[in-house]
Image (cartoon, rainbow, N blue to C red; front, side, top):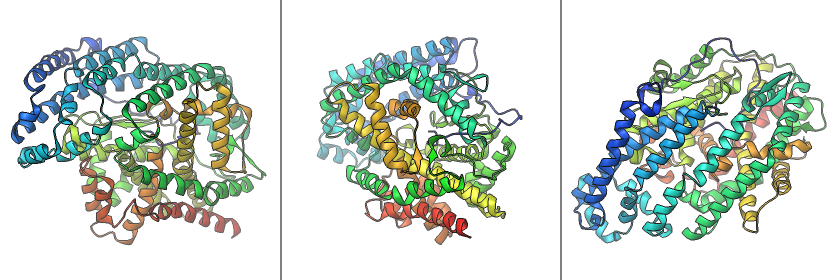
Amino acid sequence: MAGPDTQASMPAPAVALPEWDLSDLYPAAKSPALAPALANDLDRAEREARDFAARYAGKLAALDGAALAASIADYERLQEILGRVMSFAQLRHATALNDPDVGRFYQSMRERVTDISTHLLFFMLELNRIDDSILDAKLSAPTLARYRPWLRDVRAMRPHQLSDELEKLLLEKDVTGRGAWNRLYDETLAALRFPLEGQSLTLAETLHRFQDQDETVRRAAAGAIGKILGEHSSIFTAITNVLAKDKEIEDRWRHFARPVSGRNLANLVEDEVVDALVNAVRESFPRLSHRYYALKARWLGKDQLDHWDRNAPLPGDKSVAIGWGEAVKTVLEAYDQFSPEMARIGRRFFDGRWIDAPPKPGKSSGAFSHPTVPSAHPYIMLNYQGTLRDVTTLAHELGHGVHQVLAAGQGLLMADTPLTLAETASVFGEMLTFRKLLNETRNPQQRRALLAGKVEDMINTVVRQVAFFEFERRVHEERRNGELLPEQFGEIWFAVQGESLGPSVRFDEGYRHYWSYISHFIHAPFYVYAYAFGDCLVNSLYAVYEGAHQGFAEKYLDALRAGGTLRHRELLAPFGLDATDPGFWQKGLGVIAGLIDQLEAMDKA
């Protein structure tokens, strides 16, 4: 997923940026829907899914351990076929949201895959009905024992599972329900154009101006975003109201106590651990964001920062656009200094055309790394425009990609990592790159700019994401009392932004609409705290690395190879860390506070 709050600033590098080659998923064809390999896969998956249901439906409890393991292997193979199809469709759509033919193809694939999946739905539902004692006996078979972590995670959903008929209904209706609203949001946001500098810019290009040296450019960009988002507030409000109500209905049927409970279960993290993280961050607002933005306001000669100044360059910062080749070299060298194996894997993304970097109309904003399926490889999407933040975004997404390559050996069912741990590898990659750049920078002014940029990224990752979490919490709780008006969304947004950013940041009226471009609110409710979880975790992890290099890289790569087989306690134990320890989060937050201490000391020197 994209690094949070990603914004860029300088003119795009002139060098041609790489575009991905999706033929590793399916060969090119005049129309992707007519590609023989894709059509054959869909037809084969449908035949085999029907056969799978005929062989196993209603019979799982009676299978011995070895036979149950064979059924899981068959299920995994079928999911791999469907995952390949949907990965291809999603990646094509991500770079062509404005192309109706691509949109039609994407929707057609979703509908076809959903239809096939209805024949497989019984499998996990029926697995969850097997009594614990009976399943434990079956797990004595070595072939089934391999799937123990996956069965553990599937069965965590048992208390919230509905009847087979209801589960099938929810699956089939997703393409015309939640999935359709997500598509409407994506295509609406991608179609928006923002008038600026005599041009009609995309959202990504306009956000790009928020780090321009000229405040008039930043102010104009902020005004354009507020104006255009405000003009479309009715549709974004309607989409968010519908999806919040949809979630509330399903949560009620599944007996989730709180709006965030379903996300926590999916992340395999306890409610109390997330509560501890959120509370620790909110308590730290004054010593982190409030303190830093007061410092930055002084640097810019202001009593208060306008919100468009939050990520503005520091006075005297003479940053120039960083070429793509230099960015690649910087990130791979940082990875290589930590682990040559990590760098070798990372280099494959560039050699194999697994990255799509240029910003362009119709392309999804932000950045992500899509794992696709273990039989293929991940793909990374960026909107590279040559800033230092773009370099760290590359490091972030490449960290995801390396993680996904390493975890692929677990197979489709167990390669996927909970969001809280998925952000670990990406943020660690960012930290490696930052430390390399800082160690190589001797000029005091440049060091201050690097430190300030890192602090701003950390605030965006930790403080801003917890504020986003708080916005979602309040929205979902308020939605239970009825539909929210655009003004209510704006009031909640202003409240959480003021609390998190502090008295040194000033908001204009247009800023009340900025919540509507945060796509995680639409696609993955309560995803956002995973960024803060990952950043604080990595800060603690990096402190262990700095204190004991010997053997750390090997243990770290082993943790990535584990994919989704281990939970956070098991993954962190080899490093002597425990996320359930009340002091754990304070250690990570202390790293951010320490960097602000350094900046304050530089300011006084």
